[in-house]
Length: 349
Image 1 (cartoon, rainbow, N blue to C red):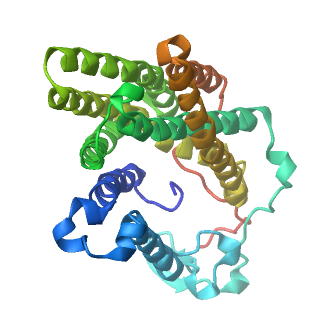
Image 2: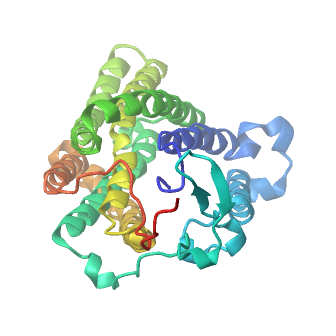
């Protein structure tokens, strides 16, 4: 994405907008027959399938995004571009006047690309450490994305916070608003001041803090419920989650840093696709395993009351610390720009 997008700051902006809209769709449209009985109370289909409406809307948005990408995104791989989409080299004389277009007989072809190396040639120590770091980052992010709804929706008596769907939707939406501010305004400043690697390693310090603060929110809720009532405890839970998730928005800057680092690690322009494919494979593997492992660990933690029900949070802190250690083994230095290797062209007069 960073290779296609002219402004990398737009990537987290789009992600943050999705974080705002997604929870609203899920929190306010799930179980419509019970949430809006005046409108959907007699719809037998929505009673039998209470989560159909938000899933249908989310699926339609994905279909629309796929259609936009298919019809409007331009090809970035030079070897796959059609000749009409390739820019024609222009001849300039010494005075800077534009001369006639150089044809194919000029010996310069913009479509010429570096030969793609074998896939195994990409597994250098620096790239392996980057791919491992990417996998761990997405594993901890997917773990937290799984834990927050579970923790918020589980009854307080069973070890959660006891929030309802609307309250959860409100909390997650404010997280998206915080992400817009942090990732679009703060990241460009930090990136210019510190550079990609320093920003990446710094924001990873936030993740163990977030894992450690979530059980503290439950402790505050318990104190408030004992001194007041259930509704006051729910308010404390919402405020606490909003604060913790706003802090997590700083940590999600690491996604954009990883995108820039992966592109910088590519030996040549012809390896962008292969290397990004490897990184995406690792991230999808993490997204596949993390919900299952984290969900099971959360259930065991509160059911068996290991470490007073806090075993899952201790594991999250440990995972974040391991990720931070791996991040310090990455030696790739991001480059501001990358140029393709082109055949030698004789100077024109």
